[in-house]
Structures are given as C-alpha cells and as structure tokens.
Length: 176
Image 1 (cartoon, rainbow, N blue to C red):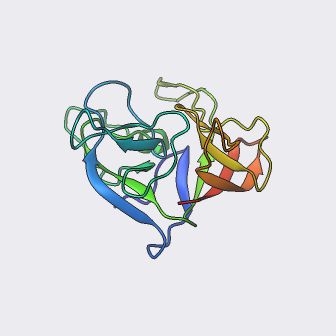
Image 2: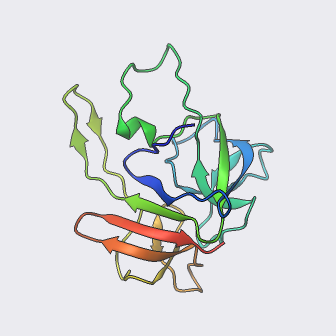
C-alpha cells in the first residue's frame, strides 16, 4: 500500500479503528483523471464504478466519501517518471475505495502551476477554496473542490482543524 498520496492530499491521522475504506470500486474509465481526496460516490449508472460526487453531497459511509487509490501498479506503456505529482493522480478504471469515518483527519493542499526540470508542465491544482473559511468551520463539496459549508447550499463534510491560506494548506476531520 502506498503511504504517499501526492502533493494535494493525505492523511494526518489514519486510525483504522476510526477510518473506514469500503468499496473496491473502479475509478471512471473515461473522462478526466481524478485526484486522490476527491469526494466521490457510487455511480448508479455504471455498476462497480465511482464518480465525482455532486455539489452539496453529504458523506455517507460506504456510498460517498474521499477517493483513495492505494494500489500503484505501473504499466510498461506509461511514463518512467514517478514523482509526488503523479502519486496524486488516480488511474482510470482501477480499483479504489471510498474512505469515511468520523474523526479521520486529512489534509489538502493547493499547488501552483510549475515546470519540471524534465520539461513537463504541471497544471495548478485547487483542492479547496479558502474564501470565508476559518479554523473550526465546516467544509463541504461544491462538485469540484472543498468550500466553506453553510449547511444549506453546501452540506458539511469535515471540520477545519488547521488553515494556512498563505501556503494553501488545510487540515480537517471528517464528520461521518
């Protein structure tokens, strides 16, 4: 199992008595590559597959939660470069799990676009919007990133325990 989920997501505390990783479902076979830590749900239109959760989706253990893909196998047809950016990308049509568990502490980081020494251009990644968020606030999912939850238009997914807007880092604990 990989202990590194890339530059934009990871667990601060991953207590197996709290954390629940269920599913063994596949990431979408087509479309955009999903990032580790994206809020996902079971796709009823494609049995056995996950999809990005809709805006305002609540965490439902075993149904909707954080995307974690821990199996990191490589194909001979892929790039020979594996770095912290690549580890944050899930592979299409590969087994993954929905992670939930009240009290599971995770972190998110926004990263700026960058050019690597090998010539690759890495796009900016926004895992959360810090607008209006303060320590102790709830965050939820807007369909593309985590944002401040108001309980009506955005349901709470986690509670913020650390926030550094300058560095673009946030830590939170899942509410379910």
